[in-house]
Amino acid sequence: MRLTKEDMKLIEEAKKIIVKSRPVNLVDTGDVGAALITSKGSIFRGVNLGFYCGIGSCAEYQAIGAMISNGEKEIKTIVAVWYDEKTKKHQVIPPCGKCREQMSQASRKNQDSWVIISENKKVKLKELLPYSWGGSIDK
Picture 1: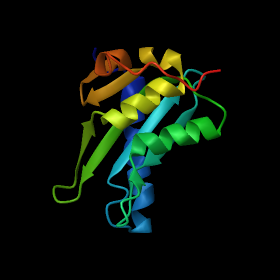
Picture 2: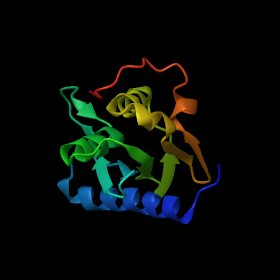
Picture 3: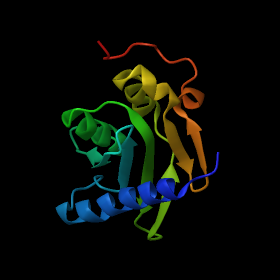
Picture 4: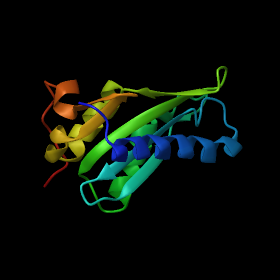
């Protein structure tokens, strides 16, 4: 499906969080930003974290954590954007398997969430994760 104006704004939010995190200046941190909008219209952002000890997490993981920390769990749309330091360009990227599973488990309703996978395409999470584990933190 083609992107909407709201989708384009969400991509810009992901780019902004990358810029905002750059002054922290950690190796392998802040080159991917994610933004999501919930079913209630709230926007949450996150950046990837990477540490030499092997602990780290994806930008989507951080944005979802912020969402849950603020009392929400239903994602309307989510996007991740990578910033290539060498070319100084941004690129929309699809989520990794861990992030797909986290989205699915945060709420059963997230199977119908939109995931922006490129600069001009979005798909439902159930298309990216057709055989999800099926578990959820929903009570």
